[in-house]
Image (cartoon, rainbow, N blue to C red; front, side):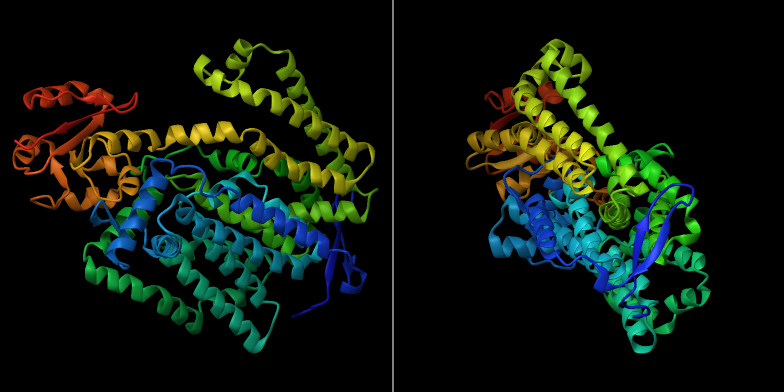
Length: 592
C-alpha cells in the first residue's frame, strides 16, 4: 500500500481549519484492543438483542417474510412468489437469504430478520477494516460504536427488508474502489475486480442502483483527486467483464423464465421510479437533509461546525477525508433528484458519517485543548442541557399537557405514561454524564454520553416499542382468524394483511379490483395483461360465482369499511360475522 504506515493526526477549527500531520503506527496508542472488543460487543447487542421478540410489522416485513417462506416451501429460488404469484418487484437474493435462515432455524420472526442483522454486522466489519487502515485503530473502534448507535442503521438492521443487504455490497464496492488506488500492479487489479464483484452482487440484490451508487461516489472522488486515469480503469475490460459475469446470468435466466421482466425491471421499476412520481413516494427536495439529522441523531449535531471547519481547512484534508465528504454529498444529492424517496436509499452514507465523526472524537482525545475538543464540549453541553430540560418538563407537566406536546390522544398517553418515570431517570443520568464530560474536558466521557443515548432510550421505552410494533402487526388478527377459521379456506375481501399468510403458513384468496392491496407493482402489472386471472386472485365481480363453486367452508375476512357487504353475504348463508379486531370483521361460510 502506498504510504502504508501513514496515518493522519487531525485537529479541527480555529483560523487554520483542519490541520493534518502524519503519524506513524508506532506513535498510535497501544491500548485499543479493549476499546475494539467493547465496541463490537456493543454493536452485537444493538443488532441482535431480542431480534425475534416483536411480531412482523406490516406491510413490508410481513410481505418480505412471506415471499421468503414461500420460496423455502416451493424451492423456487429464481422466481420469488407472493401468495403464489410471481413477485419480481425485487430480485431474489435477499429472499434466498431469509429462506435459508428458515431452513436452518425454522420459520420465525428472528430467522426472517437474521439476514439484515448479519449484513449489518458485516458492514460494520468492513468499515472498521477500512477505517483502521486509513485512520488508525482508535478511530476505527469509535466508528464501530457510532454506526451501532445511528438510529437509521440500527432500525434497518433489525427488520425484514433488503436495504441492509444492498448497503453491504454497495459500501464494499466503494471501499474496494478506494483501496485499489493505494496499490500498483496485480494488487490494484485485485481490488478493482473485487469491487466489480461487489457491484454485481449489489445489482442482484436490488437492481441497477447496485452499480450506479458506487459509480456516483467513486467517479467524482477520483475527479476531485485529479485521477482521471482511474476512471478509465473502472471501465476497463476486466472489471466490466467481471461485473457482467456476476450480474448477467441472473438477469438472463429470469428473463427466460419471465419474458416481461426486462421491460418491467428496467423501465417500470427503475427508470419510472427515479424519474416520475408513479411510486407515490415524492418528498420535498430537502427530505434527505432531515433524514441525515434524524437518522444519525446526536452524532449529526457535530455536522454544522465540522463542515465549516472542513471547509476552512480543505487544502489539508486527507484523501480519505475527501472520500467521506464526496460520498455523503454524492449519495444525498443523487437520491434528492429522484422522484421516489425513501429514508433507506441513503443508508450507504453510514460508513463515511461514522468515520468522519470518529475522526473528530479521535482528534479531541489526542488533543484535549484543541478545537476538535472544544467542538465536542459545545455539542455535549448543549445536548445535555436539552435532556435535562426535557427531564424537568416531564416532572412538572401533567398528562394532558404531555398529550398536547406529543400530539397524542388520551388512549395513546395512557400507554405512554408507564414510560415517563424510567425516562425521567434516564434523562437525568444522561444529563449528568454530559456535564461530567464537559467539566472534566473529557472527550472519552462525551463519546460515552453520545453513544449511550440511543440504547438507554430504547431500553426505557421497550414496552412501548413492543406495543407499537404489535399495533402495526397482524398479531391480534391472526389469533382471531385461527379461532374462527378451523377447517376453512381463508379469503380476503379487498384487504391483504401482508403478515397473515406468513403466520397461517398458507396462501389466501384475494377478492380485488387490481391487486393493489398486495403492495406488489409487478403483480398489478401482470394482472393487467392476464385474462383470466390466475388463482388466488379473483375479481370482485366474480365473488358470488367463486363462493358458489366452493366445496369447502370459506372464512371471509374484510375491513370495517366493508362491514355491510360481509353482513349481507353472511345473512345469505344463515350465519353471523364476528369482529376479529377493531379493524377487521370475518365470517365462516359453510359450503353452498
